[in-house]
Image (cartoon, rainbow over all chains, first blue to last red; front, top):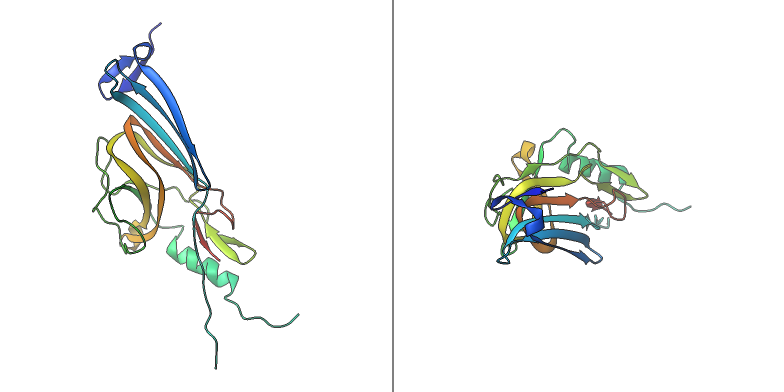
Length: 66
Length: 141
């Protein structure tokens, strides 16, 4: 059975592509990606999922009276 | 208990509600790793924004069903759903997203960075941190 996936070169048979995954995990983010390369090594599909762990924070300060 | 000098927590929540109003249309635009987007940007800018297949200038709408709230003395706000760019090709490395309020003349809310990425005929998903006083996307402490 042929599994076709949408790529930058149109629909291609997934069995003909090299599939790999990777990730970054640090205090700021956990990121995963999956990519498919054709026989020339060109990336024809790449999905990325970034999960932010931290937002930004501002601090309010009060002045002194008198 | 003695009196204390403080900025009222409710005022922090009100400030965040003004910055990130529930009724507003908020968008998320992506920026190239070579750009200089940050605190100095007062409004959305196309300078340094990514471009590519199926990516529209200005980015995508952000789902934000939950109003700013507080825990302890920290106010916080986080979009209520992941930001998703579907079936895009973004060949030049990008590492930043700007949230801005379309309903307030494209006023910048915040910018957030992450590890540099490219996307090819795929989906870029940006999942929000936990919406609390420690990790919420935008916080006033």
